[in-house]
Length: 230
Image (tube, rainbow, N blue to C red; front, side):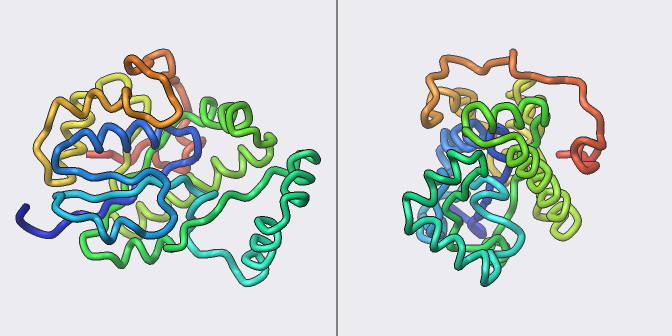
């Protein structure tokens, strides 16, 4: 390996295809990926051109770490199982453990880059409700906050921010992955096309093109839809 190591943070709303993209990248021989690591272990990965971690926004990482009162509430929530059960029973949603490394901490790492995954809200929100077990208002809030975070990163670190459309990935995976790897200073390797077979908790035998939702308006994604990926 020559040159500076790339430290890649993969971000997206829950249920937006982040696990699939992470698994695809992990199939590349010059890339090592972590899935939802909360301890900053990306800093100790060695001998790869690109090392990365995938986290969901906003429930695992946000633009800013939790404030004092929220941090106290979170500690109380995670220490008492009865509180967690009551929150779920009342349909209040629930917190997820947060990354110990805040987003700004990732951005200060040498060679840091961010890959944002964007998927149709009509697919993301129902999936958060159905598979994630969250009430509708929580699902909609997480989608909106995820888009706000990605839009903010587009503005603040445009030279280090990459945006990938989940629908475009399913429509033309070789082209999208080739361009993505070019942005990561890696040569294309066809093994990345088989990442679908290595996604955690999913039994996939191919890419599911039925999940493509082609028609959606730009105002549903905070202007990100018209911002070119490549």
